[in-house]
Image (cartoon, rainbow, N blue to C red; front, side):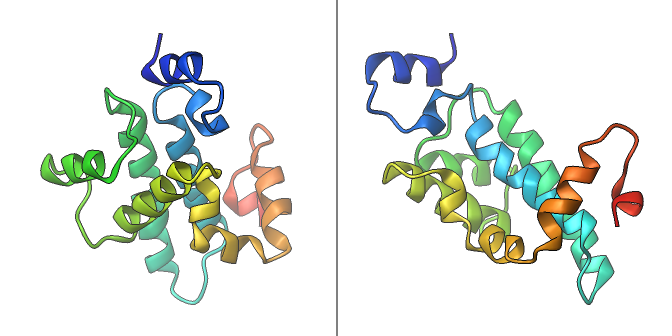
Length: 141
């Protein structure tokens, strides 16, 4: 079993986020941010394209990391091994999500950036469309 399953089995009071396998609870919000940036480029299309790529790569790296990331010390390990660069938005968002989880909240609650982007009423509709097989960002827009 995964470390997250072990934690959930030992203590039923753990947040729901820890009941997901591995680092899925951290990867999912990053994947969502990547999709939003890909779907809705703002004023500078290149910047949002690169942000989308950065968050997508972060989600992949989090899923591939062999142990469950639970503290900022684990995040610092990711910085040391070159997965993230300190000072990047991704690094800051990851530490904010870990703070939310350590306070018993959903990791998404730590992401002000995600909350801000979701205030746009088009976002939920666009996200629904891209979940349909064969519909990409251009078609959804």
